[in-house]
Amino acid sequence: MMRTFAAHGDLVHDPASGMTHRAPTPIGSGRITLAQTTVTAWPVVAPRDLDRPIPDSVCWSPIVRCNLQCPQCLDDNTVREANLSERWRVARILADTDVLGVDISGGEPLLLRDLPELLDTVRSGGRSAVSITTNGWHLGRRAAELAEHTDAIRVSLDGPDPGRHDAIRGPLSFDRAVRGIQAAVALRIPVQIQTVLMRRTAGYLQEMVNLAARLGACGFSALQMLPIGAGTALPDELLSDDEAMRLFAALDVPERLHMRLRTRDVAGNFTVIRADGRVWRNDSTALNIGGLHPLRSAADLALTTRDGTA
Image (tube, rainbow, N blue to C red; front, side):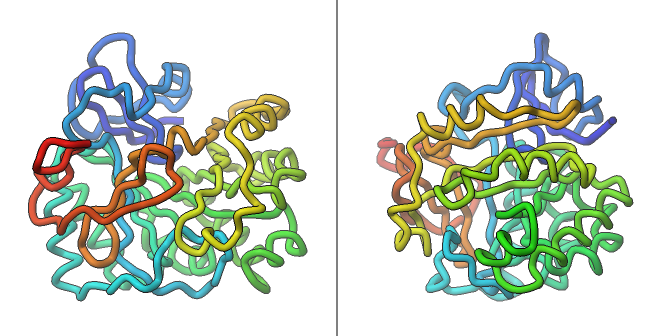
């Protein structure tokens, strides 16, 4: 399967998995089409080992609103949601950066009517691959509209069937998400299914992997739960990174399904642009997140603050 990635020298970012790989030789810069099997065979580079002045990828959450109320949500719904002109300003700044991957999340980004145009604006710089992270509720009706504007879609599923998923994310959310995934796959949009890894989901991780393969997803991500946002109320759900790695290593992986485990260690220092237009960053342990400063230019994404500290 040929897909769009973003390259800078020997670094290649996958918008579906959110991982950055190192190619054996430099392959250029900007948006590039490569075979998925080629890229996934290259080693993954941890963000802390990239030696870049800015992040390789960022999550932009231009919307706080969401139609679901997931108990493990990372978003802070007390953050002010900026207006339309502010969203466009942030999109133009992102287009002018050397960030390889921009994932548009929320809240629920499919509630934004101007989402296709925002995606195009970020891609207009020719440097970044873009993705959408969604709960899938509106994906069935918007997949065709988004197909030519995004490089990948990440759909959050936290159970392998309606009973277990809907117990976390709400009634009908499983069926709506599955229909959305099927619509996106039929349109040949690369789909990554992702699950928040916590105690209540750990027992059926293999079922989630099997479901991703059956639905035709190109990959599956298990994301260690972070005690940020609503998740601060769920300390008993946390697994250690060692527990998560043991669970992941025991999985029987279907052929051609690209796998990702995001540990809390890997999530340390990850950069988020929230709906208030400010740059936020996880601390080194990914147990807390802090706001740094407003995003006024590409320089504000620097991995050190203005006084030179990390």
